[in-house]
Amino acid sequence: AQKITQTQPGMFVQEKEAVTLDCTYDTSDPSYGLFWYKQPSSGEMIFLIYQGSYDQQNATEGRYSLNFQKARKSANLVISASQLGDSAMYFCAMREGAGYSTLTFGKGTMLLVSP
Amino acid sequence: KAGVTQTPRYLIKTRGQQVTLSCSPISGHRSVSWYQQTPGQGLQFLFEYFSETQRNKGNFPGRFSGRQFSNSRSEMNVSTLELGDSALYLCASRLTGTGGHPEQYFGPGTRLTVT
Image (cartoon, rainbow over all chains, first blue to last red; front, side, top):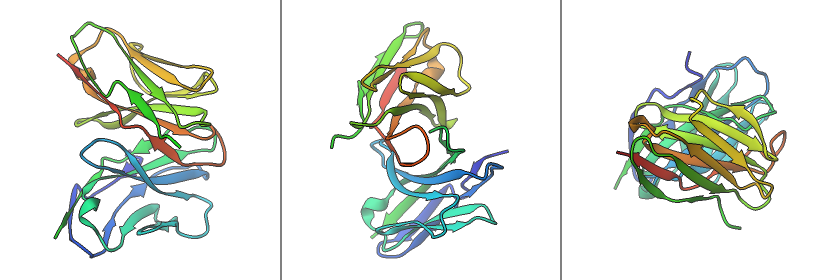
C-alpha cells in the first residue's frame, strides 16, 4: 500500500487565488512527521512546512498552511494568494518514528499558476 | 549560513563505470540522507548517515554504497553503472538524527546520466 498518496497529478490556479494540494498518508506509528516540499524545474527540493503527529495546531509558514486532519490521515497544503513563482512540483513526505531521518515521498502534484 | 552543497552538479558516465557523488551538509548538521529521483520511480530513499554510521538503508542493490566523514560530509558511490542509474541524486541534511529539529534541507542535486 502507498504510504503517501497525492491524487492530483496536476493543478491549475489563477494568480492571487488560494489552492489546496491533497495528501493522505498511511502509518501505524503514533510518532510521525509530515512535510511538504516544492521542486521547481531547477530540481532543488525546497522545504515548505512541517507538521508533527503530536502537534495540536495546524502548521503555518507565511502563505503556506497545512490542514492536518489526523483521524482522516490527511495533510493538505494550502497556498494562499498564489504567485507565478509558485508554479512547481509539490511533494508530500512522511517520516515515521523518532529515530530516523528517512522520508517517504508521494508522487507529487504539478501546480501551474496562470496570470 | 550556506545550504547543502552537492558536487558535481552534472555528470555523464558510461555503462560499467563507477561514480562518486559528494554532499556537504549545512554547518552543524550531523544527519545526511541520500535519495534517487527518476521519472518512473519518483523519489526513493537510498541511505541515511548520522555521526559516520549508516542508520538506515533503502532497497537498492549493493552497487550503491555510501559513507560519512567526521566533518559530516558524505559521499555515495555507484559501481558498475547501469542505464537505469540515470537519475537526479539528492542529498538532505538535518540538525540531529533523532527527536527535535525535524526540518530536513535538500541540496541542488547531482544529475547523473549513464550512456
